[in-house]
Amino acid sequence: MISNKYTRLAVVLVAPLGLVATPVFANTPKHAQSPDFQDAQATAIELIYPRYAQVGGEPIEPEPEYEMEEEEGEGPAGHEPEIEATDAQTAAFVTQIQQIGDICEAAPDEYQIGCYAAMYRELAADIPANGDYAEVKQILEDTARDLTSLTRANADKAKPRVRVSTTKNNGQTLTTPPITPVKPETMVPLRQAAANVMEEAETKLLRAASSDAKRAIHYQKIAAAVGSNKVLLRSA
Image (cartoon, rainbow, N blue to C red; front, side, top):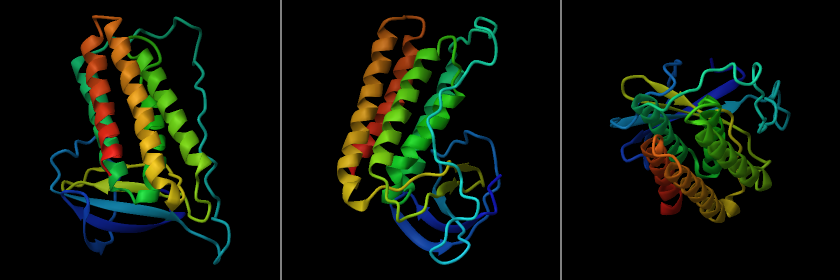
């Protein structure tokens, strides 16, 4: 549920996502977490800004600072079942990574690096901590942490953190956590730095794939999806 402490601004982007049409306002109800945006002909992009108590004032009940927190186990070690890699689960992770590229590249330029950081952190949190995907989780947590460090070190404190929501023609939506903007003059070098972070993750995933034949194809597919995000970052 999106908090009513945020005001909304939406624009329609017609495929390809870089073409902006007339601004519109839209509601974005919550839907399934991993909708497939790949076949969308038009996608609504919504920026949800924090509402201020007065001009120049602080946001009303501002959200806590975005933190990379270490997750703790919920019980004694060995009590949780080992999760085996499956084609369906791997495909779901690949789709999520592709969607990260879609929504983050559609966000305003200064919010894109923060978007990647926030979305990779959410993705890593969804991946099982034990079983065949455990190493994927660790690699993507490291990726999110490195991207967060880039964002924080270059944050534009004159602009608010926002959420970005994409809506497909059929009404399905994907919404980011609050994302932090970076200073405009840092965007070009930061995209290259972020691409390097993605490349490192891709390399680690491929290396992990080569060490275990059982999970190799799953790690290779996830690595390819991360590589597609790397290409997006380097293409601008």
